[in-house]
Image (cartoon, rainbow over all chains, first blue to last red):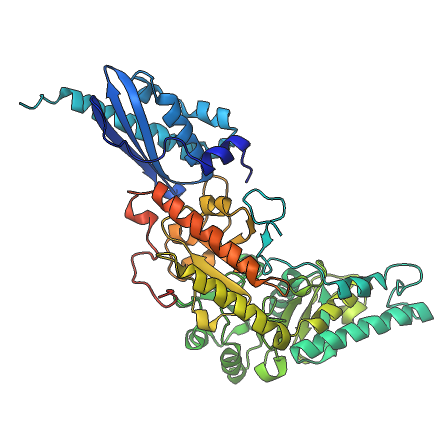
Length: 131
Length: 406
């Protein structure tokens, strides 16, 4: 299996990995996706405020390409409108990182996790404010 | 050697895959290649041919001495894969009344795929499972034998886990039933004592490149009186069982490699390295030896690292040249058939690594490898914090069997 320099760099130092610590305002939601047959699990956590994604973090059990693409997604989403969670195109990450096409099945779980985040953000927005 | 990730010269811990050719072997082979050497066809009757034939005969003696067998029983092949095929296809082909083969689910693909090819042509095959310790139970194997069994085929040392199979016990059961036993000894020679006479083995596959010999040469040893048909046709060399001009240089190299591969000399060093790595890895949480450590060959340690993705772990350890116990497809990882048979979950089988050592492996290299692993595994586990239970399962819904580090 070949790994591009960008995949190697993001695998070794995955920017955006971890959880959102002490969110300051806005709504925080997480979403997960997995495919056991592909040996992959992804969890994203996003913080949105005023329709904008302020922070995106991920955790991953998966191959180097999956980890690198999740890291790429976390950085790309920061500052993007929340609609980007639903419209995120993981193939853009794949192309940017030179990930082989055969890995697309695993990478698509990133899209699934982000859409799950979007669902929960919507639910959070509909919940009545406490007090 | 450098051990930094991405280094061009990783630490080589993949001797079970193949080994560098020993200098003494290279010298032996070079003596058979040039015009001033023993280049002639060993089947030629002139003086130069006879000189080459003497080198082949000397190699046979060296090989036979290493395996405790009669040199005349050796038939040279292109390697153990061909030897395994010749054993199975040849014995089943020569058998008219008996059309049943017994083998195990942990054999090398060159046995399993050959067995499946035979099945497609009408041979009935019984595949015996191993226990969670990676070892085949002789009783279970004996129960698989039928009146129409033509051959039993069991490997001596498993190439993935290093587990030593109870060949002497299996051989005695086969002998009592008058069924020939074939043993693939590719991973056993040079690592543990192999004495075919004492074991009572009828056919034995060998290869040169696992013990510092060249790739592309191996042999099948056949006990006199075993009926076997050739797979190839086209000459009278090797009693017609494997025709074709003998590659003197390859055979000479194999002979020298077998002469040098003395388990009494190299085994203790290999066993020390194996124990050293096992002890170092025991410092990491939730790490498991695949198989029964005390019943393994000294050169292989197969370890499961539950909770990390196998491909990610191997990439994190790219400063090491190691093998996965699995066939890694691009998008559909396939767990090792051996580890799955032992009851490991798919995720744990995929997260298993085979470390294998050779005579030039050093304790420093083992320490460096252990340090790299101790950095990589917790990092990847932190990255996967909160992952579902299947990512961390060692076994497929069963309790952990023998083989845990603790």
